[in-house]
Image (cartoon, rainbow over all chains, first blue to last red; front, side, top):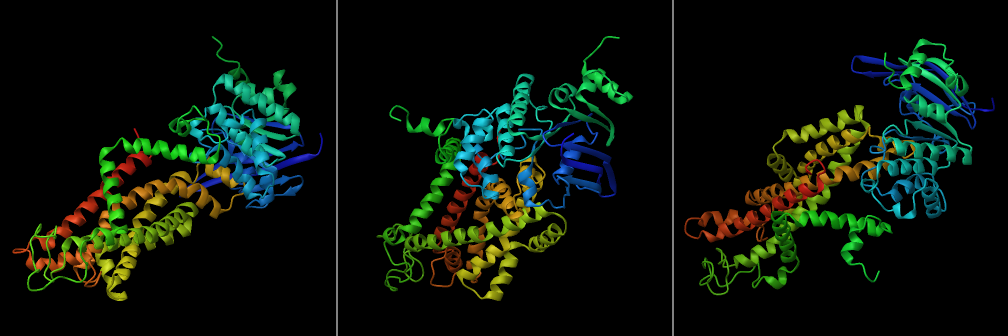
Length: 253
Length: 304
């Protein structure tokens, strides 16, 4: 394995509201090499999205450390962090500001970080995700779900990050669009040498995209698998086997 | 560019520039607004108020302050001679006074909107976005202001600041921001944890930037609606302060003060108090209709 890009050790995330405490993530550790595509799989409520949110500072880290290239990350994250790590959200209908045109969505991160050549960068980001420049001044309500998700990907890429966090990037899209967006993500990773961490409940998607993955259940990582082990069905825990057979679809008894 | 009409250019779903996208959005809003004839009546009244205020010198046939001959021209009923609405106890032409009074009314409305709306937005969005102690402190202050009836609080402020139209405006502005803060806070609470705000955070946007560029535009439409609907109340409060002698001072032709001075002659010379009353009524109605129409157009929740 090459140089470690991102390292999470014994991560705990606990949400408190009033008297309720929910331990969403319990002692999860993972490390992702540069240029690797890493998957996190689990059912709804297993804490897989929370791990991503903790990495980028949206969820509180109650215990454990998160390190980027060997340096531990402070909370709140330094501005420089956001240039290196970006995230694509699950629901493209909720992740774009309803009153901002595509142009504004893409110009905003450039303005925040003081990038030069903004016009050229916006044009380039749009063409990279397969949207022509006639999409540039549209509002989100004038775009389809797949187009919106492409805009969200362009927004994440425009800061030229090294790590892309993908929170079920295709689960809100219908099947034909899913494949297009996954292929787009694959191509971009190959071209830019990006590191991906991808969360999904869909084993087929993860098997297609990721070199290694962990399986989460009730906030804990129950198993770590390589893609080869996954396709050969060499799972060691019952839970993973159950997930695997569930992903093969309905089998009559 | 030769064959497409201006309408097509505005309504295209693939605009070619920032300006075209924005104008297209405005034009779509206007098309919806235009379909509501009551709102158009409201808009017409408000526009008429603005035009009358701008051209008061041209429109008014007489001086609003200096009256005519006190022996022959007092209490002339409406439609006598050149006096469309008659004259008052000092032989002043009531129509001219109402025309000039529109300037005061417009000044009150505009200044209160310009002072109170930003305060309400700033307090409300900050409280909603930051939560915790900021929220508690800002909202308790808002509650204190809301606990007093508006006119009473305005009266207290005017009594402390001294009577006069400027102080009345300040007093009304100070007392009218809390509902906007409440509204902006409620809107902010519904969007602060949404993915597009999270996305802005992940781009490294500062809190001030998120509040101004991401949160405020979404709160703005409901606050604008509320402000427009409140305009009638603001005009009435200003008139009420004028009526009580704490707003505009004589001989300023403020509508509320005109009603107050005409009140003494209400039985025999009804027009002296009635004419400014009608003016207040029409303008208040205009703002209410406009506000209703704006709500139909701007409020995404009310849209069918």
